[in-house]
Length: 190
Image 1 (cartoon, rainbow, N blue to C red):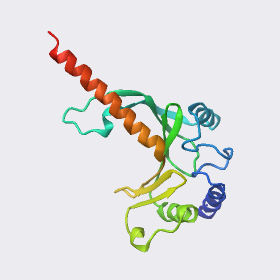
Image 2 (image 1 turned 60 degrees about the horizontal axis):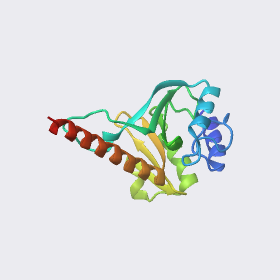
Image 3 (image 1 turned 180 degrees about the vertical axis):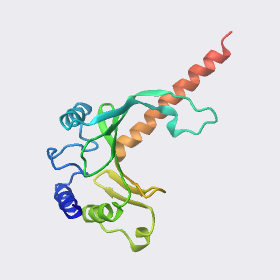
Image 4 (image 1 turned 120 degrees about the horizontal axis):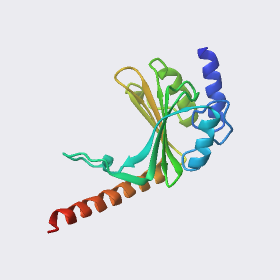
């Protein structure tokens, strides 16, 4: 089983894609390229279950003693389960202006060596000192790739389109600033 998974993973990585299921078409789920509608068609074809879908909270980038939900309508977050992407138990997608900018896969414990090996083959070998950490990262073709070990042994793997991620942060700042201005007007009104 593990050998079959590794073989499938290497075939997929050879096509310069993020880790995606063999049943998907080449070019699917490319941060910076895939439109919301394309991704939606893929998850519907794969009969994935939408767990949540909502606008991102513009305040997520800012510390606050009174957290609020300030929806940024330019950023959609979708969480899916039962989508067979390389054995991931959960898939999270982030869209900015209907374009995929972030892809997160969540894995059960025990898959770290396999994932780390495959990612190093695709994006380059890490220094020995980096191999002893729980966070491994690469920069590749405008993408930031991060494999992070969690305290319970599970793993999260993220591809983030760097330019779009900066645009998301700027958009969050704009929405949050508008919210603060509006709240200040309401407080100072007679």
